[in-house]
Length: 67
Image (cartoon, rainbow, N blue to C red; front, side, top):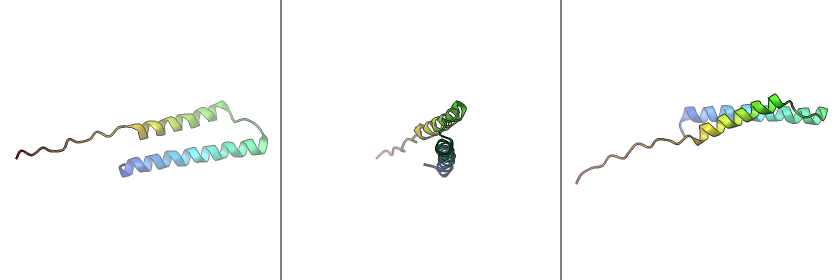
């Protein structure tokens, strides 16, 4: 995985983890369910991360040498 792609993945994961921590705290403190828009935002982040990770790398063909 290239460095820039790795950094992008780490950034997505940090954001998602923070959002999930915030939702967890809200559930503990208020006993309320999170807003649907918050859940959709997290789902969108997870979807973006999945797309980023599932992109197939285009392999360069190995050069063929004639004997």
